[in-house]
Image (tube, rainbow, N blue to C red):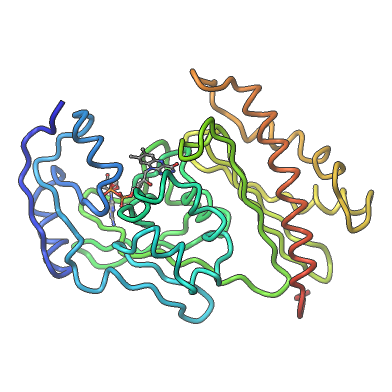
Length: 298
Ligand SMILES: Cc1cc2nc3c(=O)[nH]c(=O)nc-3n(C[C@H](O)[C@H](O)[C@H](O)COP(=O)(O)OP(=O)(O)OC[C@H]3O[C@@H](n4cnc5c(N)ncnc54)[C@H](O)[C@@H]3O)c2cc1C
């Protein structure tokens, strides 16, 4: 099948891109890398009357560390982030990016495109939620900032209004005493995940803070605070929580899976996968936090 006919514009400034999108009165779509949108058009799952190509928009291809975060513009390719030294400041980007499709797709696909597309099994939305990244959405009424955990509203559904462009994402730079984990299971490398987990641990003088975000198991990334579960496991096993963490996570990971299952995996299979991945990655995140511990806050 071929895409239905559409008009195509390639503005060179953000104000023009916003005006072009507004002119379509909800019938237009932004195209960035096209790695998700082109197949959607070819299958006629969407029939936008105009495509607004943002690849020539000045300033959207920037990536920089600023203060306590890394900011990635809307046309920055996934592959560039994977290879850029700056992404070392956000270890989860380096861990997650190689799992997205294949290198050729990542050479074209953008970080912000993946976030805007909001596939429930995609890696980057889960990373953004675990870190509670901040998104800048630009529209005719100016910019607004939305936290990742409020951005994803369901499968392929986000807080973006039809006349808004996701112009950048800000991810916090990893600090001393923080450790991370990432894992997913897919049938073949490059496929979307059957289940995946992102873990973050932050050591505090009182007790560690721990966050898990699951993907591929609901209509959006699912984030839970598991500080209590980690502390209980540490109380039982000292600094090597191992199997005790897994035991503690049984109830929470069961509750995080709310898909009914599909042709690829049942609900129970996904629950078992998620529990195994969560236990393993939370333990690793804790060990990495211990290794990287410098000044630890109260
Ligand atoms: C074979 C194959 C395997 C894949 N495997 C994976 C995988 O394992 N994991 C994964 O996460 N992804 C996977 N993808 C998708 C790929 O990573 C895409 O690059 C990504 O989802 C979208 O990025 P893009 O820049 O290509 O966006 P596009 O395809 O250009 O756009 C996708 C959607 O987001 C909207 N959009 C894009 N940018 C913006 C913006 N700045 N503001 C507002 N709206 C915007 C578009 O209107 C469109 O609706 C796969 C794709 C293919 C074809």
